[in-house]
Image (cartoon, rainbow, N blue to C red; front, side, top):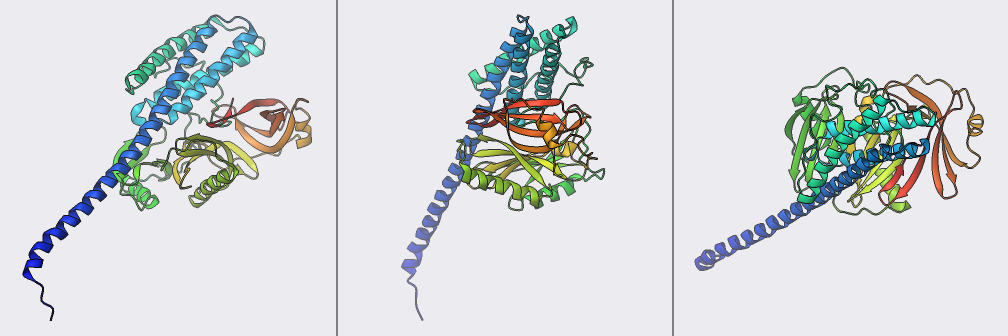
Length: 436
């Protein structure tokens, strides 16, 4: 029998307790430092997006001012193109802000409709028509509203605050929108990525779930996180919202009331890498995104364009039916650059639009459609695509990805008439592929 000395017992126990306390203290501060670092990453991303939004609003305000001085069709068309591009850039920056930092819905509607209106007036000018007094007045209203927004958000950059956009701004609920609602949808993050904000969702079943069932669905998607209920969001697509905050960072999840489907989730990236990936990394990122979409029931998807942000790459995918790309049915997948894990998803456009289409056969052959292209373009890739032209109308087109020297273009040729429905220039930037 081994006998333990009473002296060793009395002095050893406090020592063991002290060692244990020291270890727990180290672990506590290490976890706190990790959470603090993740919080700094989120704050840096938010600040970057906010400053980009502020810059685009200021530039948009300048472009709208130039319209008051422009008179020739060439200058008007160029300035309308700038307005459309800057509206899209501001909308893209706004989409990256946490919903607590900006009036997402109100400002996004303003930016969307400003871009739509500019595009419609550009088409009018290019067709040889003059602007009406009413249209000129609407542009003045846009300028007044944008000036206030630019000042408000610019002030936020100066003092570090993140104010909300005014709820009673231009195009509010009481504004006459008769000449606004029928214009083509805004295009950014690749062609046709902006959903129709006024349309009824077509990609949701009629059956509904309650909050308890939505919670079970969300928890099953993220079994390693302890979610808490954050309430219900009343919008065109009603959702139940949940969140988690732990050593793995922040997480927010939205499940649709109709159908109990995943609409959106966003986690925390593990780093801040934002340089363009090489071919090998790009392949790994796409593989991770494609696998996630397949495992979560999104069916066949075609990769489109990518953007790079701090620690994250955003990959855009469009649904495919019988070999035809459905550009309205878009899903954004956020992949961590370090772990190659999917940390976010935005399926808003997909849930709005996705359903079985009645696709007719093209009247023109691919060769016939290709003959309509400019001789200055060299086609490199062709596909059939269904593109949105309004809230309720889609057109079957041949999509031609072309080059002209070092410049890349995408041309959409109507598969029935041969008309050039859309032409985009693809710009390669440090933030990814931009389509203008």
